[in-house]
Structure formats: structure tokens, C-alpha cells
Length: 275
Image 1 (tube, rainbow, N blue to C red):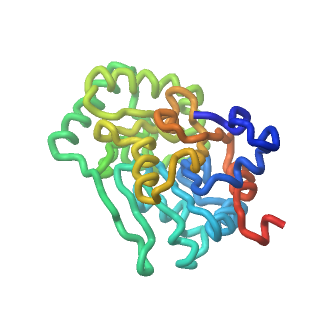
Image 2: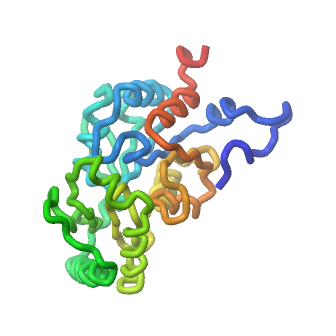
């Protein structure tokens, strides 16, 4: 993985950040913290940047959320133009499933459902790991604490619909979730286990992660990962975007959706934007 500062020089000298971004044919992005605040709808500014970007390039969104969450956070806020949506690819539950827009609607391409015995093992592991980690169920929770998303089991410390302000206070340094994750890894090493969002831990089948999604979209679009860019807010070790480092994709880390919007605007090759 490289950022643009480490990209090789071209014949004219150092490649500018703008030229480097323009050279990317596909952008892969995280959702929570990257395109939108956690469990919240994208802003008008991000929506406008996405709409412009989709006029000339392809955008892939990979997140731990369900497909329905993609609808609320992303699809409801952007253009409904079929010509734009055909350039958008969705990978809910950390690429355990995939959706494309075709013939006027969203179509599921694949879905890596967990089997009943796998789910049972994951729930048992969570029960033990939470006890070992000193987790105490909150007196007031917001929705499910441990949620079956068919392709993924997700733990949300305060409930999956907790207010963002409360979630940010629960585990700001990730130490609570890292302890739970480490205990889970000992109890259920046969699964892919990662922290996500602000209070979550996601568990999928082994090998199903954001790197898996990048490989899938590279094959589908017949595009080298070197022609792609990943944008995420948690590319550090232990972060929910860290898995992409297993690929050769170039990456940029952002601290908020506004930065992502700026990158998408710089990367577009649409004539009206390129003047």
C-alpha cells in the first residue's frame, strides 16, 4: 500500500497529488466515518461530490452495515439517475454480499450467509468474551446488542441504534473493543473478527473482509488494484479498514466525510469539473 507521496515518478518529475487522483479509475470507500457520520445520512456536500464523481468514474462502497443501512445512509441522499447508479457498487457486511444497479433496480450478486452452527458458535464466543472482558450491558440500550445480519454477526456495545454522541464516549481509544476482540480471537479463531464503527465488532466467515471486496470488484471490472484508490477513516492497525492493506491498493486516510468529498472532487475527470 502506498499513498500518493510514495508513488513512482513519471517522466515529467514528481506526480502531483491531483494528477495521481485523476489517474484512478475506481475509488473504493468505507461508509461510516468516511462518507457519512456513523449510522447517519450523507451530507448534501458529500452527495453532490458523489453525483459528480459517478458521471465519469466508478465508486465502490464497503461497510459493515446491512444493505438497508446503505439505503438510509447513502442511496436516499444521492441522485436516482440510472446512468449514475450503474457506476456505484455496494458491498454490505464487509463484502460478505454485493449489489449492483441493473435494469432499474438493485440486484444482489452474491451473499455469503453464515450457517446455523456458525452463528451459534459466534454467539457463544461473544457471551464468553464479553464476560472475560468485563463488559456490562448498559441500563438503557438502543436496539440489539448482538445482531444477526445473516452474513455477519455484529456486536454494538450500546445497541445498534444508539445516538452518535453516546457512542463516541463509550470507547474513544478502542481499548474496550480491542480487549473483547482479542478474547474473541482466542475463542473463535476460525472466523474473521474486526472492530468497526464507534462501538461495534463484526464477525464474518474467514477471509471475508474489505480486501475480499477489493479483489471481487477488481475481477468484475477487469481493473488492476493499482488503478484503484481506497479511502477510509480507520486504516491503522486494528481499524476496520486495515484489511485492505493485504492488497496492493493505494490508500488515503481521512478524518471526516468532508475530506472524502474533496478527494472525490479532485479525482473526477468530468469535463465541467476538469476546466
